[in-house]
Amino acid sequence: MGQYNSVFDIIGPVMIGPSSSHTAGAARIGKVIRRILGEQPLSVDIYLYESFAKTYRGHGTDIALVGGLLGMDPDDDRLSKSLEIAHEKGMEVAFIPKIEKADHPNQVKMVLKTKERSMTCTGISIGGGSIQISELNGFKINLDFSTPTYITFHQDKPGVVANVTRLLSEKDINISTMTLTREAKGEKAMMIIEVDNRVDGLLDSLRQIEHIDAVDFFN
Image (tube, rainbow, N blue to C red; front, side):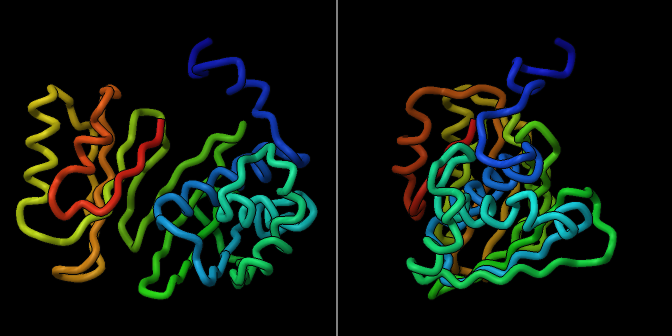
């Protein structure tokens, strides 16, 4: 099957909406960004580019992105009412279509705010429901979830990164890519770790490391 991992990469995922790129992919972008943020945002500015900017209402990209931010999957029956649900939950949403060119025709940038912090994240829907995260808080990344990926949220303290890499080494886990970012010195920080293989029990082991507040896993 060449570049395809499964038949679903060819025929597309189960979804609500007319386009896998504009609906299923958009919902997955929203859900991944929600998981990276770790909580529901109080407000989000959604900047849409090129194809997303032109058709986001007609193709349901708007409801899909917001549904994802609310934790919904692409086939969730509530997706069509996501804007109403977001309003009921107190999440302010602004859609801002942009006219300038982007790196990809199905690109969206979100600026999210909670009570204590803000985060920017750029996502791309590459077709068939597959997505990439290409920017996080100003850092260029290439997160496509094609390999097991762990995201840690921790305090910016000496030794945290060393303890994580030591744990991975002890479990004979090879790191393919690793991205670090922090709000400020000594404040909240995050690691994105892509590894070659998933290992049972690693999630719990990472959560036990001092100063790590939460760990999420994508595969």
